[in-house]
Length: 189
Image (cartoon, rainbow, N blue to C red; front, side, top):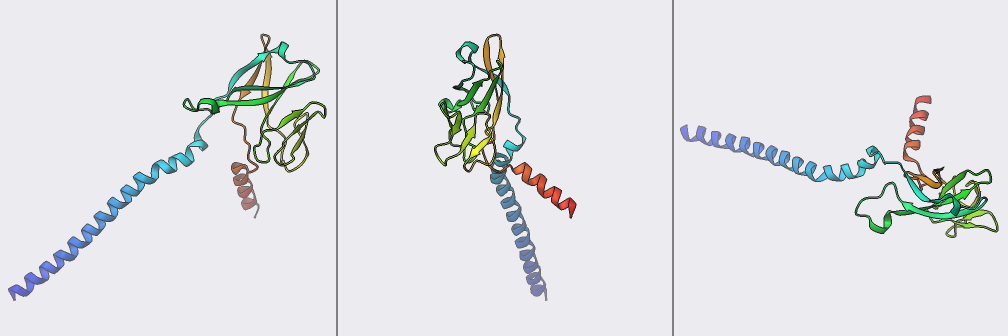
């Protein structure tokens, strides 16, 4: 009888040890998985919470901008990283309006982000990639662009023209707008 009870005890200890080791292995696997996944999740979510700095960038003296004309200017991007090198440069089309004020438009088409060019004779911005056309005020004239050219704030200060750099959305889909629309339609139902 003694042998039989010790055999049952060993059997029960094996089952208990096996369960314990299984749970420890699963817990360690979960911890390792979280350690691996956390940086990836942080990388995906970080842009949603990061506030981008808006900085006034000097693009030249006011005397370089003739009234009634549009000029391409380049400046350092607001969202650039220290190691980004030449890619920190971006550009804008600055128009010197007749009344002495300025307007500035992004060089990127709102269809797929291709660079637009100014056609002086036609008074239009044109995207060579897919035939997008914009009027001088940035509104869509023809083609596939879903919305007007994004505008930068611009000012003349102490004889210099400055552009307020900020991240400009280029995509046709605004994820936050889609989320708001879903919430609005869900609350109406």
